Amino acid sequence: MMRQPAKPEIVLSVHNLFKAYKTGFIPKRSPVLKGVSFSVQAGEIFGYLGPNGAGKTTTLKCLLGLIFPDSGEIRLFGEPHLSLTAKEKIGYLPENPYFYEYLTGREFLEFYGRLFPSERGANRGKVTSLLRLVGLEKAADLQLRKFSKGMLQRIGLAQALINDPELVFLDEPLGGLDPIGRKELRDVIVSLREQGKTVFLCSHILQDIEMICDRVAIIVAGRIVAQGALEDLISEKILFTEITVSGVPKEALEELGEFLSVRGERALLKVFEESKIDQVLRLVQEKKGKIHSLVPRTETLEDLFVGMVKQG
Amino acid sequence: MKVKAIALNTFKEAIRDRILYLLFFFAAAAIIFSRLLAILTVGDRVKIIKDVGLASLSLFGALMAILIGTGLVYKEIDKKTIFTVISKPIHRWQFLLGKFFGLTLTLLVMIGLMSLIFLAVVFAHTLRLEPRLLIAIAFIFIELLLITAVAILFSCFSTPILSSIFSLAFYLIGHTSWGLETLIRKLRPGPWRILAQFLYTFLPDLENFNFRTEVVHGLTVQPKFYFYSGLYGLFYTLFILTLATIIFKKRDFV
Image 1 (cartoon, one colour):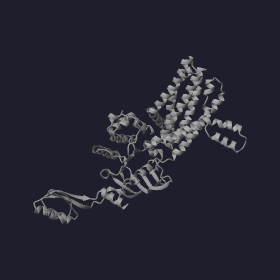
Image 2 (cartoon, rainbow over the protein chains, first blue to last red):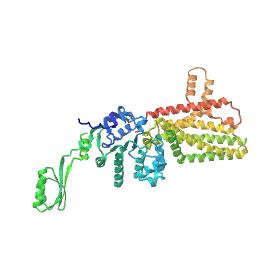
Image 3 (cartoon, each protein chain N blue to C red):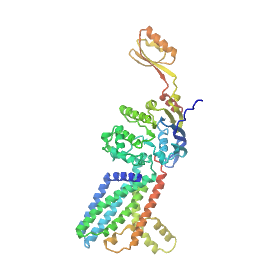
Image 4 (spheres, rainbow over the protein chains, first blue to last red):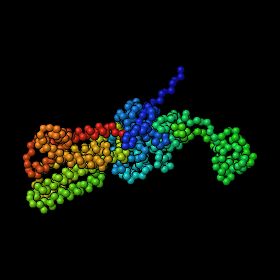
């Protein structure tokens, strides 16, 4: 008899979440979340995508108990999301680092550590190792008001990890970082997964999401328009092929594809049909030209995202 | 433990705030100035020093409670520092109580320091220690606890400027509402008297904490008055903190 694969453990489930804000002098309700439902499995990096104003941060604030949804259900580790035992197992890094600027790096982490029961909270050794993890050992005794944006982002991440959480919520963690900072932070996020932690990543930097996320949900105008594993959402089919050639007259190539750019002798051609790729190669051979690159392009997360936003 | 962590963080925030030192400087200057005032005044100089000194403690203590208290919760929401704290395993009432105790600790330290200066000025003039002054100071402190709670209550739903105006109004009404008691005695039974009684019941009477005249002039006070005043302060503070908690519990941090 075949054994059924074990059902993945759900650490966060959100069901039919509605939230409207009252705005204006005469309060008028403007709905932000219109029935959001999704679930996050243990040990995965879950990407939560959406354009600005789609409801990403509102969802996150509902999950963390910062705002109260009008209706719907949120369960963290099978418990109501506001229960303290559930909150003991989570970490959170907000979008822009808003922290107590009068505290030093060490005082800051010690303060957050004291908000947890002693077995989860911080001791001196843990604070030092977290400062080392985020590369801020030397800034331990510097007040946060003197930190750069990148440093604040890193101390914020350390704060989110102070209780050794099982689920970490990161809101736009890579925004405002330089390329090296982004790479380092991406590595830290991947290492969290390797340690068995679950990561909930809110972002609109699609390349990063595509690189590190296992599953994604896309929210547009308060509704989830797609969710699932990346490989299920993005088709593996080749959409077109980009060929860079030189030494071939432009006129001869015109019928075979679409020119994306022409620089001197070198032309970048977008070819949609496989048969035409062979024709381009033959033509290059005949004319004694040169092929500089040939890149087949499959659908990217960006294509999917843009398509969904346009539909939404 | 969590309340203590919030309280200590609030204390750190307050003692690293320049406004506290500005008020402390003015209070110290006023207390020392009382000695100069005494020289220029006809009458009992010691009484002038004690009176002006205690009044300075009360006024500057209240200003500290209002100006720092009204910004405490609002700043956390405005600067969004509250996001990370509330996402931790902490009840919202624990956060609010931590803020209250943090400012209480700050005021304790500040009133303690101002009292030391005040008692030193009095000692320099009389060359004897007067422990009875401590009773008046203790009741000033109880009044400050109530004002702190009021400042935090307003801070839960309005801006620091509006909260400061509301809290100052509370302070001023509190120190003048005793006039209603005289009014009630003079009014004939009827709707106006009922209205005055209603107002007197609900408006604070901060003069209940004012033992300055009795202490300065050496009048005797029955212990039960101390007891009732202390109890009044305790229950009023608890009532205001409960109200603040109810408002804060339902608030969305947008």
